Structure formats: C-alpha cells, structure tokens
Length: 100
Length: 335
Image (cartoon, rainbow over all chains, first blue to last red; front, top):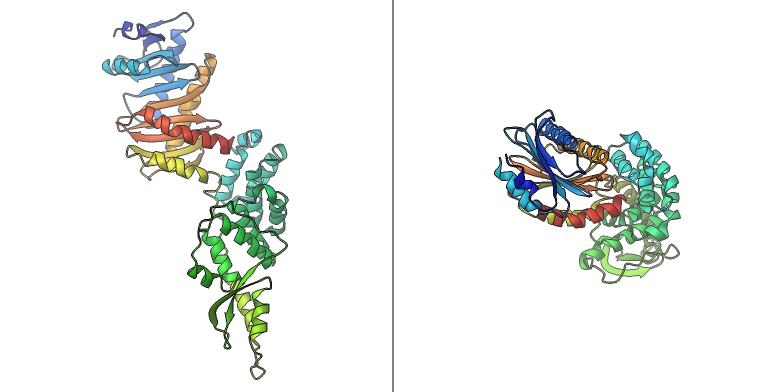
C-alpha cells in the first residue's frame, strides 16, 4: 500500500496501516501527530464498530473540531488517514476506496 | 444515567430526562428532577410547564395551577400550558376558568381536539356554532382571554328545551339564559333548571380524563424540519439520543432496533471523543459509519446525538446540510 498517495494530498497530516490490535505496520505523519497513538485510536474505534454492528470491513469518517480521521478495515489491517478539517476530504475518500 | 444527568441539570437537559420520566409514568421522579433543575435555572419556562403538567398528572391540581399561573404571562401562547390549566381548573371545579383556558388553547390551535371536546361538553351550543362556522386560522396574533369576563355562546332552546339553532352571546352562563327563556312548567315534577344542572354535571363527568400527550411536547417543533429530512427517499430513520445512549425521540420507520443503535453509536462516539481529547485535538463533532447495507451519520448537538440512518447511496454531505436546521432547533430546545 502506498501511503504517499495520501501524504501528497494538501493538508493531509498523516496516514498509516495498523494491525487489528493497534500495532503500527506502516505509518507517516507530520511531527505534531504520533502515528502510534493514531493507530491505537483507529484500531480501538474499528474494533468497537465491528463489535457493535457485527460486521466486517468497517469504515468510518470522524470529524473533530480540528481534524477529519478516515478509518477503513482492509485485508492487511486498518488504514487510517488524518487531515485538517479543510482538506479535500472527497479526494481522500476516493483514494481510500481504491485500496479496498 | 439518571444520576449523571441530575448532576448536570445546569445544562438544561434535566427537562429531557423529566419528559422521559413522565412518559414512563415516573411522575414523582420527574417532579423531583424538575424542581432540582429549576432551582438552578429558574427562568426555564419549558421546564415549568412540564412541572405543571407533572403535578396535574399526579393529581395535585392546585400545585399545577399555582405553577402555571405564576408564569402565565410568559407561557400564555403555549397550547399545552393552556390545556393543562384548563384540565386542572376543571378538576378543581372552576369550570369558568377551565373554559377560558380551553378557549385560549383553541385560539392558539383551532385543531386542538382536546380543547374542542372539553368545550363541547362545558359550553352548550359550542358544537352547533362550530359546525356552522368551522374554525378559521386567525391571521392576527391570538389574544389570550382575560380572566375578568367570559363571553358565552348560548343556543336558545324552544319551549320543550330542544335547541333551536339560534345562538346568542352573553356574559351570563347558559343555565341562566335558559331559565329566563324557558317557561316554567309547574305541573312537571322536575324543573327545567334542575334538568339543565344535571345535564351540565353529566357533561362534566363525561369529559374524558385523557392524559396530556407528553411524548411530543418538548421536541414537537422538530417535527417539521425532521419531516423534511425524512422525506428524502434515501433516509431510513432519524433519532435523537443522549450522549450516553438514552433515546430521546425516534422518527424511524420501525425497521431498526433503535435502542441498540443508540447504545452502539453512543459507545463509539464516547470512545472517539475520549481518544481525541487525549490527543488534545478537540472533541468529536460528527461521524459517518459506513455499513454494507446502510450509512449511519451522527452529529453531536450539545449533550445529545442526532443520528440519521440512510441508504448506502446517500451522500452524507447532503444529510449534514439538511440536518443543520434540526441541529439549531435541538440546541435551542435542549440547550
């Protein structure tokens, strides 16, 4: 999986692939963001969605006051992309769908 | 959960919890939480109306009247408050005041069946008059009846006591008019006036003791904007819940287990919120969960969550645009 596809998008702050238990497989982020923490959050939220709704291939977009976090469960683990609120979220979403 | 919200009564959410208590028949609990919340927010008139209604439902009609009359200037255009006052005065035996408040409710909403039915029983000729002249929506702001004078519409009876269809306006109660118009019939054992009194009593006894509709009161103004959202073909259901998963209002079409979804969504949102607060990146504002068969859009509105379940093909951006108006309304109501 090429994380560059996401990192190159303006205002994307980080992206990564984590295992189901939250360990980082691959990750890149700006200095302000800790990929390990983001990975742990991604794994926790995806795990929660899977348990709550009893489904595989969970996918979510989470908006906070400053950021937008994309989560998607794929074969290799869980992909996460974090960007600023005013980033091109549509483009991130399209690229995320392509890696499924 | 009740205890948590009880502590957070400053956020005005206590009224929502009280409404749930009332809906569940837990009137004492509702009164308790409303009194506690109103001690902190004495100008929260919606909560006072709820307290008045709770007293009425508990059978404490004098307290209901005292609570609502104290703030009547502020709530005189509240249909529910007028109905509640009408019911309470009726129970206290003050039919004249009851009629006044029923009429006030009817002026606010000419379609209010509760007020109409009560007036049909209390005011002879009311039904006949309104059959001839169906209620027209007033273009002017409705004027609330003053307690000093009540105008009665009385159908004049013929010699046998049957209504003639002729209507007169009078400040005197209908019984007095009938006594003047009807000739005395000494040969009969039962006088007309006593018959009228009996009839009036039977009317009063026949008024159905319907409990006030509590489920739609605080959020009824949301029906219209939510209705617009629900009118989208791709929207399956809309519901509002507290952040801890307690359902406040459901506009769903009954296809989903709403309570389970509320709990799941609340759990996910709580997780995300905590995680992002640890990162010091602000709390959750909204969230889109994509399931294979549907999409769940969740928006944080104060201490509540507005959840919209749509078909997969729906564009979440469109949902958020439609939901903006509802969010404003919810914030206004729930604080």
